[in-house]
Length: 212
Image 1 (tube, rainbow, N blue to C red):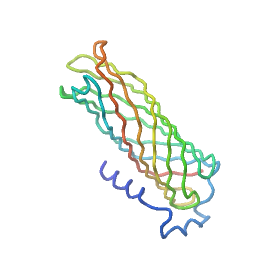
Image 2: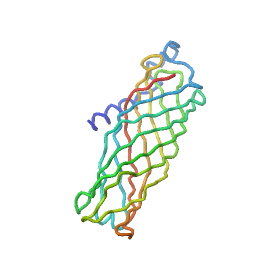
Image 3: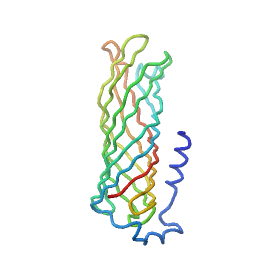
Image 4: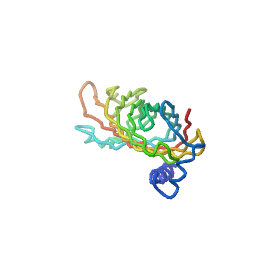
């Protein structure tokens, strides 16, 4: 499922707004101006951590599992080409090490992005975005050798995005989106620091959206 999601998202992201179908951009029954509009998208996303570790966490070869979950986002178009997007979703990940399974933790990373939308009057509309995410780690049940592992519950980091909307009707479109989010947490065992875990996931999504 994750491989298929990646393939479909890659195919949509390769579509160009300047190809042989660019003439469709003039079809006002399907597309138009966007200033003042809301775009709401529902995606299936594959969260793929790009893990880095320090100190004892590195020696333990700590890893973080992928996750496949739904995501919803809300974009307000300030101007035809400028949007502000809030992304919401949550996931659960299992941590592994050379000592075995360390348990799981839930991640809630609301992300706010400023976007630039290309070809806003066309059927095929790529966009790029940059912003910040705030990550909350919750419902943690981590342990190593039967000893509880504590982690810092909060993280703030940058986020980057590239995506594409392909119009299907006047208010409905298909979306593919790739984000890079930087997040990390510090871990301790019996009150002593055992290092920092950088999760920094690549988030690949595909879904549908509506404009109103």
